[in-house]
Image (cartoon, rainbow, N blue to C red; front, top):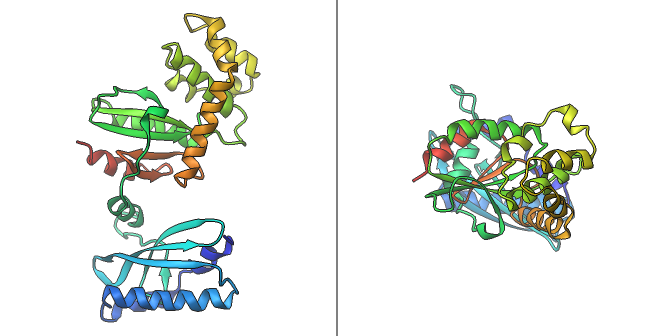
Length: 282
């Protein structure tokens, strides 16, 4: 799909503020007006191969003329979803609460989207028990700075909670040690050596070591160094990491961190959203 679709669509116009003064439109009217205007937009750009759906989720509290809407765009290559605020004529990507400075879109998306169905059996348990009442699927890169901040934040917030964390690898190409750290983690867990915390806390000097030096360092901490090294080099370990990245991409993940709290997504380092998600735990 052409990248310009949402870049052009998601323009914030001051005229949108005027929508607050109008009488609130019924959901069906907003949807119909939005579809009509999307049709005009795509026609003007000669993008007639793009189809679209408009689903009105709920009105915005206090600004009833605006609706929280899910837009779904499709063409021959892919499908893309986007949540926005609109009166059918204007699009607002997010609305910020003046008192808190926080946007409300993330909260509404978390509230209204269904939980993803993720096969935990294909992931590695990094923290907690498989019998826990709650779970988090952590899609992450051990060398990602925002993933590290997320890890430290959640480590404190989850203390004493009945929760399991399952790791899904997403090593980013521009982090030179992300791939080897993913393999070290898997090889360690296979030998009952959990390097989860330590891999998130490596220093720049340690990251500058060669892959062989890194493997030697962690191997010395295991019960069988030779077996650990063999696991790190095993094609099956590399395949597991690659397969998990494909699974994350199929979920729509494009960057890290991305966390599923009992199946509900919070993307990025967003402490207020982490807190909200943890509040929903059983």
